[in-house]
Length: 376
Image (cartoon, rainbow, N blue to C red; front, side, top):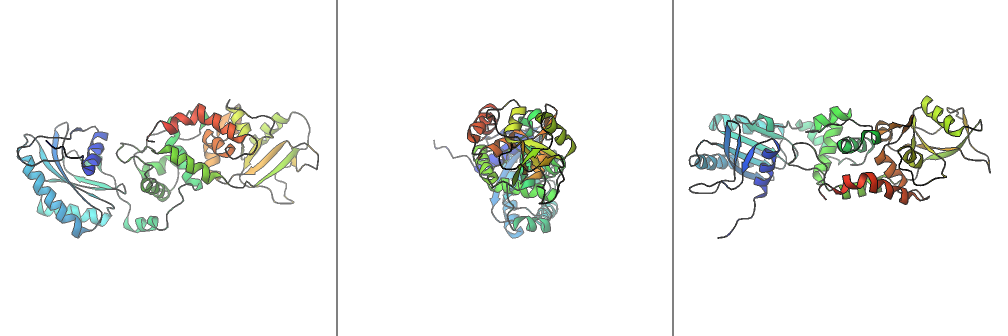
């Protein structure tokens, strides 16, 4: 007896239902024909017939939906206690397409459960107990703006949102970000305190590049080794920084702590790693992240002056390339603000003074299990 290969569309639906707590029978027995799935939760049970189309056009989707409705009805007659559910999977489901599907089903198949599932994230189901599966689409006009041009997956705000998605797996003292399992782009926007459009753009890019687990009940980053490799490469830039010395000699560490308390700044790189008890490289002046370096002739940091040739460097001011990601993710360690563990790893990786060794230590102790343990 030959065994049919698993249907990828049915696999997507099965994972979707399972993620919401439905019991899924992937090989239901029927007198004739072969339905894809039978799903059950509480008093609701459905036999599911799924179709798929790469085009999100009504003239393509409605005929497929009609066929799925007829087949699901036929299968339901042979299984006691289940109702038919017809589902069409589509590459992109706009608000207008969802409206067409709803109107069609209500006009020509009233009482029959139907669903439209989009790879872009939107889901629309009609039927008892199915509301929990729904995810609203972007408005059509906004969707067009998102699709062109593609957003930079490692922009400043996107790096911050990636940290928010990773936060539940990273100790709180190592990353200053809300810890919540996020189910959709709107929730991501709310939790990360960013615009809804920014969150939708990132979610779209993560889906396009297969970095987001589609079947999970909440957002889960996958292929993390590749994601972190690209993140590390994107973070490599020539830094804007300036060496400084303190006007008053002595008690260097205390003076730096006082400076950080009076200015919007945080320790970075090796000094930050030391504060997190992840230090490995010593003897390098502490790096201090600031939003903007002082221009020539400006003295916003009156306690500091550029060193003359031969004078000791007490600290290095570095302008944050991604200030939202750096400062929102910062934590308090030993009474001072320090950049988060992901940021430290990114920043030390390319540092010429044994930065690779420091990055490897952080990866082994903290990030490795998070990166390599999921979907790689």
